[in-house]
Image: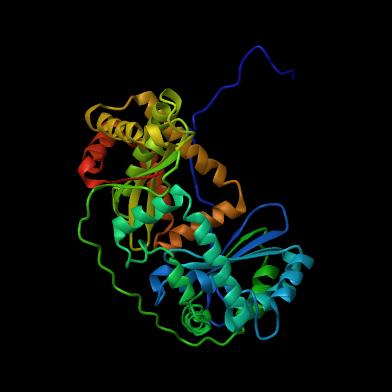
Length: 427
């Protein structure tokens, strides 16, 4: 049958589709370690994540969590850092270790056929990293050098200052690296933190890709046979600071021609009922290229190459932030326009067509994510680490599809009060 090229195909909005999160397989290894895995994709490439309670929330002193993550794969009882890097290169694999605010994650990308060779090395890094003294000193020198370079950049300084204003410098979410805290790190600090927080008994393992039973078995043969020592980690308790001066200006470079703007407030995490509806409002306000902030401050005014608004949820709290860099001569004008767009959302109903565009953008992104094994794994991982089930995913989809312009205006009136935002400019 010949194609009728005189008639355009029907175009469907993303909002019209049904969304179902591909199934997650949950099992336990022989020693009881939880394994969550997603079998999808056509290539024999796997991603395995080991997640530990080893982020900044748990560190006993500043800079220890990131230093531990940065040095872990630089030597074990059996392997030097050179041998570890050579093995990864030989097998075409990649191993990343990163500490965030709450958790630390060890991620391995590998062809499934190389798991028997690579998994024992990963296990040794987790259980027997020895933090050679010379590697600790190299890390400290490099970290201090990066810090000194970054401190010359107004956007880096602005990020430090806004987090400290929101949470306080003694809070894990507001703490930032200082030269003296890096210099104070000792090998003993890292060994103790690694032993307590990277205890294998605390791990949750996630695997995605073209996963077969043989891959699950390969993981079980190495990690399921390891003896587990029960560990209880007691996280610290942290108080938010007293309210500081809401509007602040900083000079970081007397000759600076660029200013970094941060406008932010505290905001609940994913467990609050307003979080998902606010994802929609935030997207309309400043969360994508077609947003209000981009259309005004970038396209119309030409003050910046880009401006972005985001929700930043953590396990133990969160924030909402608008950030951009502009020419130093227009920073105050740009700040004024940010509040102008907030006020417009508070006082005027958004257009239905504009809201439909935002809904299609959000749902279209999810549609794309559900087509790849690694992005599917990350969606499941986020749900599990935040204590959610698949029901939360379905609820989010329903909100994205059904939220109205009146509901958005009510949210704007609740959360876009200018008096609740800290406002800083660093030049």
